[in-house]
Every structure is written in structure tokens, then in C-alpha cells.
Amino acid sequence: MAQNMVATNVAKLYSQRIFIYENIKNASFLIAGIINEFYTGNINLNSLKKGFAQMKSFVKTTVIFAVLFVFQIHTAVSQETKYENAPKVVPNTTEEMQTPEFWISNIKSNPDKVILSPAQIVELNNETRRLLEITKKMKDINGESFSIDNVNRYNAITGVQYGIEDPLSIKSFPGDSLRARLRTHREYFESRTYYDHRRMKIDDDKKNRLYEKTDTGSIPDVIIPRYGIITVHAMNRILPTDEKAYGKPDNWYLKGLQVTSSDVAMPVAVLHESKDKDWYYVRSEIAFGWVKAVNVAIGSPEEIRDYVNAKDFIVALTHRIPVYSNRNFNSFITHLYLGSRFKLVEKTNQGYHVLLPFRKPDGFLEIVDGWVKSDAKVSVGYQPFTQRNIINTLFNHLYSPYSWNDADHELNCCGFTRVVLRTFGILAGNWPVYQIHYANHVVVFPVDTPREVKYKYLEKCAPGLTLVGHDGHINVYLGKVNGSYYVIHMGGYDYTAEDGTVMMFRRVNVNDTELEGSYNVDNWTKISPMRP
Image (cartoon, rainbow, N blue to C red; front, top):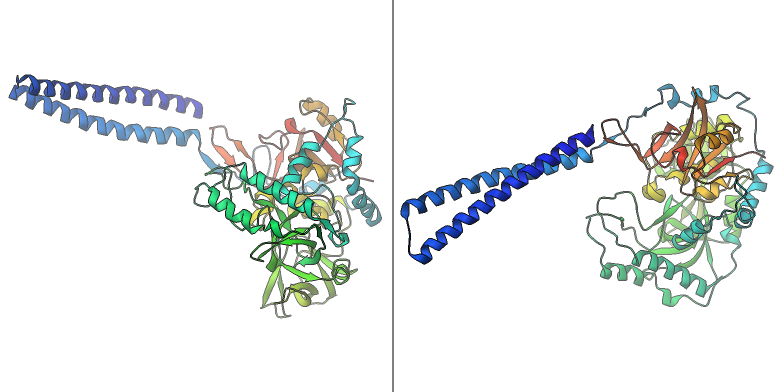
């Protein structure tokens, strides 16, 4: 329907363009005739007067049609690229499907059965360090080898790492490796055109000022790191700046300088600092990158380990839980984000008395008291890994906004699944392929594998316990209803309505696996059941 409207408008535009052209041409002939009369001396006042009247009419008519022409262009383009916010209930879903209870009641087995014990999760966490070695030995369903090397090469440029590493165990770091890494960041940014918040190109002068801030000339041959802990939810950046960088003038969410986010209480190794001392270049559990120095408290490995390995702690089951400095909850300190944990002192009727890392004015670590309200969605210790708990935690974030590479303190697809998995103690890398390969039962297939073959493998998988997608996007399988399969995911995508309108949901969403978008089953290359 929309395409027909556009075609009709294009035809109108073409005919109006011809009319305007003919008017301009006729006016030009009149002007040429008048000039000729002046030159030849054959001036006829009546014809001259008539000529000017005709030209005035031509100009007036042309201006009117030119305005209409521009308006028609705008209308045609608007009709061709009309955008609207998607409804919460997208096609082929229902109101009931927007609740965790619907999907839990649809589970055929016991939803409270523990699928992975804490010991099994620790074992799998250790296995992720061997991800590259493991995937090199794997075959797809056709017996063909496959590779995640392209993903690794891209992430090596931006700083995302495939496995969870302990930054507190880094005793030294080669200076030439760090210089090469910073040079790679620079080349990545330098080779692309980016636009700032004004939609203006980021010019070479501005880029050079950012490169100068990295202060690579002061990097020693052997780096002895300092150790720190993240004190507030922080952005991890390719260059030491908060400035926005967009791939296109009208592309608001592809933020070219964003690597990922760093969770509160995440330990880091500080490898370098910016020339102005405002930024640290760190190695966290999941990535390299620049973090604001004010968001990091420096401490000894021992005191940081004592905090992050505390036996008693709470973990956030939803985003942005307020933390206060007193029992009256009237003095806000910070937020506890989904998947983050604070050391627990005690649980009382008033709430949770916690300890949290704090950066003193001199930059060093201090552990301070905090309080979280009793009705906050937290778990004392990690949650048991059950289908009910997984689905409930996923739905705690339903409709929360998408943000590229976890920018602006929100989440993207893999950022969402990463922090949900952390509530169970599962430590997976921050990229779809790294999370899909966390468990040892991945089914891999070519992207053009028929739907019915992909569904045959999905039929054997348990809802809530199965990650599906491809190297660039991840979903969690929810179950099958009336012959359709459903997922929940953080989607940065859109779909097209029947009238041609582009419907944007760009949020945590429930939809079937055949809705238009990168989550569509036709794009899948992997199914990963998370089980022993």
C-alpha cells in the first residue's frame, strides 16, 4: 500500500517537474525576445508590455508549483520512511505473553528444578577461558569446521575480550602490547567518518586532540599495574572522552567510541592514564578500555579480593536499585545495576545493610556503609539456576530501552543477557557468540539452513535455558505456543507494519521467531542449551 502511494507521488512529482521546467523555458524565451528587440531597435511597447505580463504570470505560477513540488517531495519521503513506536504487544503475541507467569506455566517439567549447581557453574566459568581452543575443534551439523576468528579480530580492535579474566592476577604487562592496542584503537577511529551530537563531522583536529590525550609516549617497556575497583556504574571507551561519535548524522544509537560498561564492584588492572590524568586505561574482567579515573578506587589486590569474594552479598535482579547512606533512606549514594553485587552485613526488617566501595578524595579505596530498601528486587547470594528464576529475571527488564554497547547506562542484546546470567554467578564474555558458546552443547549450522531443520533442534531445548541467535545477536528461547516459537531479547531492530510504517521497538521485547529483524530464525546460526 505504502509503495503504491510513493509511486503515485513520484508520478505527480515528475509531471510537476516538467511543468516547472516548461515555465522556466518559456520565461527564458520571452526574456531572450525582449533582449533581441532592444538590440535590433524593433521595440514594440505593446508586445513588451504583454511579454512582461506573461513573464510575471510564468514566475508566479512557477513559484507556486515549486513550493508544491518541495512539499510533495517531503510528503513522498515521509510516506516512504514513516516511523512509529511499536506497541508493547507486537504481531503474533498477546497481553498474557508479556508476563513471566504465562511462560512459566507453559513449561512441561518442574520450573524450580536446579539445572546447574554452583559447583557446575564455577567449572563452566573456568572453561570459558578455553573458548578459542574449544571452538576450533567444533563442527557444525554438516560436519564442517567453523570459526569465530572474525568476531575476535573485531573485538580485539574495540577491546572486548572473549573470556572472563582476573585483572588482579596481572603482575606486569608489555608496554609494546599496550602501545599496539592503543594504536589499533586510533586506527579504528581514524579510518571512519563520525559525527558529533550536532550532526557535524568530527574533524582531524578534534581526533588528534583525543589521540594526544592517550599519551602513548609515556608508556614504559614493562608496565607494573595498579589495581582498582569500579565504584559507580561506568562507561568503557575506545578513547579517553565522554563525547558522542555516531556513524551517520541521523544514527543516534551506533556510538563509535563505546566499548561496553563496567559494573559496580568490578575489579580492574590500571595499565595507563591519560595525559590530563582524568582517565585510566584498564583491563576489567570483560574488556580493555578507558574509564573515568573518578569512577575507580585504587587499592591492594588483597583488599579488593576480600571485597569481591565476600561470602555474604546481595545481587541486583533489576536495573538501578537505589542505595542510601543511612537507615532512613533519605540520602542517596548510588545505584546498584542488574547483575551487580554488594557485600552484605545483615538483612533487617528495614532493609539490607551493605558495604560498598568508595573512592576517597586521594583516589584510594574506602569501604563505606549503605542501605537498600527491603522491597528491592535483590537476591541474597546468587540465584539458583532454575527456569522460573531465569524467566522472572528476564521479565524484570521487559521494555527497558536498548543502547548500543551498553552506552548511557543502558544495555544492548549481549549486555542484557550477560548481567542476567551474572545473577546466577555465570560469568560470560560480553558478546553474543561468547555467551552462546558458554555451555558445551552448542548446535551450529549454516545461516541458510531451512527453518524446519533449525526448529527440529529447538524442539529438544528447554524454555528459559536456551540461547539462540548468531555471532551478532542473542535471544533467550521462551517456548512454543500454537505452533509458533517465541524469544525474549534486547532488540535494537524494527519491523514493518502492513501499511509500510517502520515500527521501532529497540527495547527488551517478546516476539515470535519469524518477526522481521535480526532475531528472525532465518538469521540464526547457533542454538545453545545451558545444561550440565
